[in-house]
Length: 298
Image (cartoon, rainbow, N blue to C red; front, top):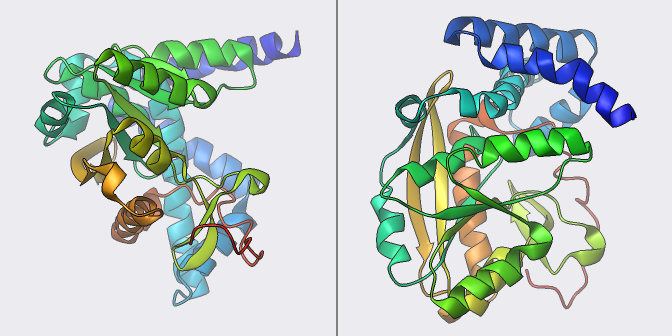
């Protein structure tokens, strides 16, 4: 009952914002940013700590400027997620322009492809890749706790023909495709902090050793799937340029940890180019300083 009430009270407002003209849409995003971060102080200390940790050379005033830009981008992404299915196919291809979709088309001829993104710029509009060259794909996602919002977000993310598969079912699904000789791309973000109890790999991320997801490289090797990085660059507010970069199409030949290291290097380079576009509100470095088990991959 509480979930339904929350949804009925908030979703109509979000839907109304999502259909606003471009300029007014981002004006509302600005107002929400100022309210949540400026007045309420949501995670402001965490954001400052994260930025200071990753950019120790920054002075407090510089961190403050970056944080304000990151707060604004936080709400841009949140609202853009709900705006995706309100845009026409031509408009979303203009605002989320994929420069080389043919890379996926070429790889999909011979194998499945795992497209790795990050919580940077805009990852929600990845589903529009299906608008190019009749590319078929699925996104790996986590369910939202509120089942009413979960249904709404599911509908939005699958709007352009993208299938959805939970993390729990990802390996079973991609394995079944590989066995049938059906080639799809599977999009996912992999820069989150995994549960410490399930961690199998530690790597340095932005200079700090933390647990990282080893799943993408191990699954790719198991089913011989190519791995591609999706770099998203914000050209202006609400507009993104996407470049796909091959990490490897021979995952079985790579030593443990090499693929994950390449992925993290690409994410770091992206963050350094546009640090305000990263989700500094995530408690990504919460396990820093903890001692990894000596038998885990580094």
